[in-house]
Length: 359
Image (cartoon, helix red, strand yellow):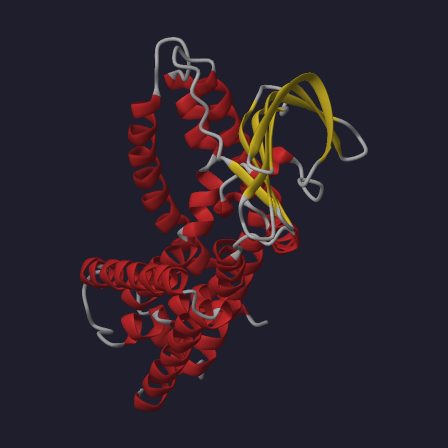
C-alpha cells in the first residue's frame, strides 16, 4: 500500500468519524426522549433510561453503518477534492479506478470493524439494556413487565409463559394438550415454576383440567414435574428482540424455533440482514465516487452532503420496505435481504467505471 492509499484511507476514516459524530447524537437524543415516556416515580428512572440509551449506542453505530459509509466517503473525498489533493494524485497517475479500490478497502475495514462490534459488543450491551429496563419497569407501581410472551410446541403439546421473575424463573405457565381431532384433551395452569438442571420444571400452584367422555375433571396440586419444551436456549434469551441477537444466537434460536415447529422467518430475516449489511456498506461508500467527481469544482460540500443524506434515507427506507414485504408475504429470505444490496453495489461499480472512463 503506497502513501497515497494510506492518506486517502486516513481521510475517509476521518469522514466516517465526522458522520458518526453527527448522526449518533441525533438518533440517541430522539431515543432518549422516547424512553422518557416509560419513566415512572417508583420504577424506571430517567438515569436508567439514560443508561439504556448509552448502552445501545453501539447498535446505532451498526444500524447506521451504510449511512455513515456514504456520508463519511463524501466528506473524506470531498475534502481532498476541495483542496485539489485528489487532482494532484490523479496527475501523478493515481486513477479514479485506483481510488475506487482504496475506497472499497476502506469499506472492507469498516465492515469488519462493525461486524466484530456487533457480535461481541453491541448485542451483549443491548441485551443488558433490555434486561435493565425490564427489571426497572417490573418494579414500578403497576408491576408490568416488558418481556415477550413465550410460546413453544412439541407435537400436540403447546406451552406459553406469561413472564419471568427477577431470577429468570417462569411465571404464569399454561400447557395445552390436544387430541388428533384438535379438541382440547387437558389444560394445566401453574402460578410459577422452578427450572432444574436436567431440563425438568417443577410447576407450583398447579390447576389441571382434563376432558374425557364428555366429562371435565379438575384437580389441584402444590407441585408437578414437567419436561420443558424450552430446552435449547435460556428463557432470558428467548425474551430478547431479534435485532439484539448476535449471529451465533440467531443461528441457535432459528434451530430452536424449527425444532419446536414455530415460525422463524423474522429471525432468518434478522440473520440475513446482518450478512447483507457488509454488501450495503461497500455499495454506499462506493457511491461517494460519483458525488466526488461529478462536480469537481464545487466550492463546498453542503450540496453533496444534502444529496447524500437524501440518497441514504431513500436507500434505508426502501430496504426496510422490501424486508418487511418479505416478512409479510413470506418471500425467500436470502433473495429478499441480499438482492437490494447486491443491485446497489453493481450500480455503484458501474458508476465508478463510467467516471473512470470519462475522466
